[in-house]
Image (cartoon, rainbow, N blue to C red; front, top):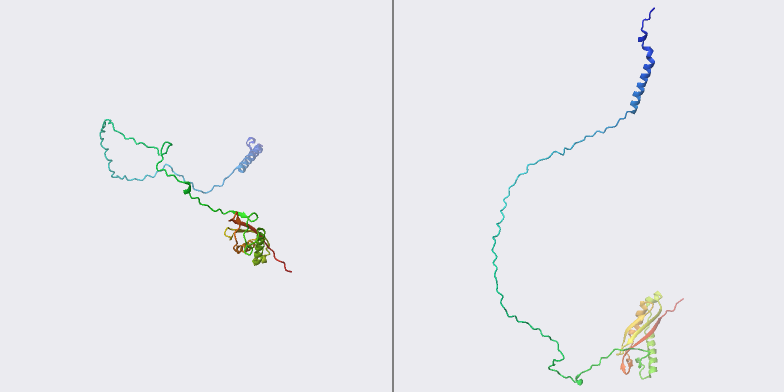
Length: 245
């Protein structure tokens, strides 16, 4: 019995080859599908500017009535006048010196005698210290004493004047301000007390010390070589309060 199919035309004989080819194709397609990349596209509109486009406006032509420039000035011929040199007498000004020389005589010389010159004596305000004055100022009540007794009497009267007119400032007493105030003053050639200066621990005490000295009575001025002079004197004033318990 003969077979109905041609063995050479049987499809199944090469099935393994076809399977291998199909498998390779599927693997190739799968690999390309996995390697394929996609990008997200944004929706935007891109406008293109045409730089070659020009806007041409019709510019009207305006005619202006400009006046014509003035004609150039006419050239005037230059006339050169020749002047002959004339000799002119020039008067020279001579400047004479006003300085007087040794040969010049002095006119209207008036001789002045020595007796006609009046010399005025200028009194100098000489200030002498109390320790070296020849004659000390005389305090009221010390008249008619010797030099040494007059000096001792002056010092005693000044101390008595300070004690008699002493007044402790209330503000300084409340604040507890105390100490020594040195007062320097001048008895001028008229016997008045001037130029009072003081130095102490506080302005309140200095002011009170100057007040005490300023009310001193007028005295007979001190004398040096028989002439009244200014005498400088210094006195210490102590401000001290007694503490109460």
